[in-house]
Image 1 (cartoon, helix red, strand yellow):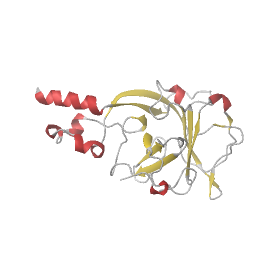
Image 2: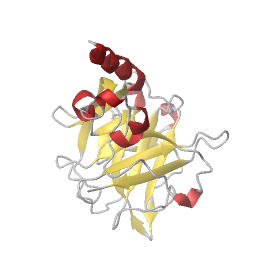
Image 3: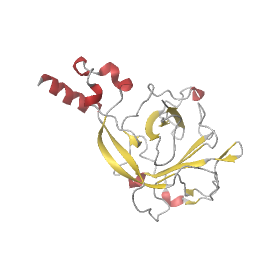
Image 4: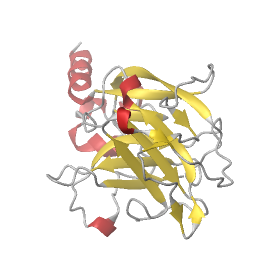
Length: 233
C-alpha cells in the first residue's frame, strides 16, 4: 500500500498531457490548412520554397494547431507550423534555415497556397489527425535524480513514455537528455515543444530509428527562434 501511494504521488508529479498526431488511415481532407506529413501547402505572400545549397528542401510536415483539443504549452500564440528538411543530409548543430526550416504562423487568414517545388522527396504524403494523451511520462534521463528509491528498478514498467509525432508531453530520448545545438550558445534558452519520430509508414528516418526534437526560445523578444536536435540508435 505504501508503494502504491508513492507510485500515484510520483505519477501526479511527473505526468504531462500531450497531443499525438496519427499518420494516414483516413480520407484526406480538402482544406489546404489541414495537417499533413510529407507535404506543405501554404505560406504567407512573398515566401518561397526553401532551399539549401541551391537545392530545394523536402516538405516534412504541416501542422494546424487549431485542430488540436488545446494548444500545447509554448505554442499558444501559434496557429500553424510548416517544416522542411534536407535534402541530402540531416542537419547537425545548424540554425533554423540551414538544412532545416520551421515557419510559424499566427494568423491563418494571411496564408496563401505555396508554389511547390519538386525536391525528389521519398517522404510519403499522409494526412494527420490529433488525439489527446492524458498522461505521458519522462524517460529515465529526464527524471533520474527525482525517482523514489522504491521505484527505480521498475521505473519503465510504471511510467511509460509515448513515442511518435508528439506535441508536449516528454521527449522520447534515445541516448541522453536533449543537447540543443551549441551554435546558438543557448542564448535562446530553448524549451522542448514537439518531436517527430522515425516512421516506416511515412518513409522517414532520423539516422538509425532516431527522433528529432524541436525547441522554441523562452527568452523575451526571441520567441521566433527555433532549435533542432536529433538522436538515433
